[in-house]
Length: 327
Image 1 (tube, rainbow, N blue to C red):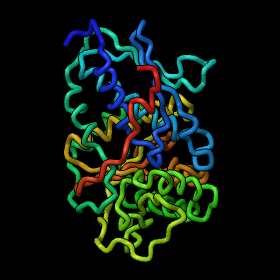
Image 2 (image 1 turned 135 degrees about the vertical axis):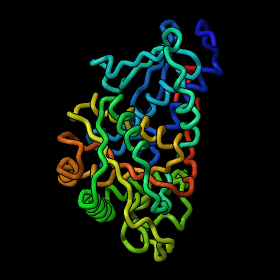
Image 3 (image 1 turned 30 degrees about the horizontal axis):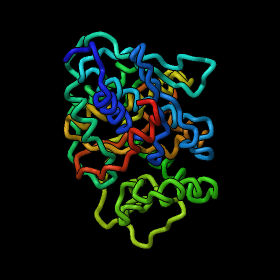
């Protein structure tokens, strides 16, 4: 298509694609602006959608925004533009995390599969089968992270056990922390209880055999009946890392995370995120350690992968809510 003009419906479609990105507790901590003169989308942190107790440094906000930036890039390429991305472009405006300028004609048409996948990607915290992931898929996912400046490793049984134990320890702490429990309650059972995207039966903090912790959407909840369907015995986990731990690294990690998730989705693989241990500095250091073969670096996210049922779609904020009068 021509890149000479950009109409409002197309711009809105780009924003809708961006907000389809994942975010911690589905907080959707982003807002967008648009400079018509330079044809540039501005991506800001929405501070009122942050998690002050769970994410005091804003790392999760940056990861979430990075995911949205990647979706925006994919959508721009799908509509024929070459996305020109700048991270933290204005030191005097720390809430402006990225800009994406709609440049000339896209240099590649390979974004089509990822564009289709971004509408289908939903976190699935249901049980997966024990069917192993093929080696060529693991290589493709590793390359997807590498392209965005991150590394992806697949820990063996000992490393997987270490990650699961750290995740479980974090779950216990989260349930016992009044401030974090209040934040969880606000975002998952407040004015929009459907934000959890899960049926009540799936709200337990782990499966019935305590084998695989999953995100506890309500740290204040203690369901009497947990899921009775067994989870996979040997979960396939991937550890996403960056060489450093600066704000730009968090944004790059978010873009790498979303590329990995979309590649997996395009290949028919379900995903969910284990972020709990990353919210506690001492537990995060365990994940920085020898949990896999990815070498040194800072852990940014743990991804669970497998074959299983599709997860439900969580509600998203509208274009008007994330852009106001900018469109």
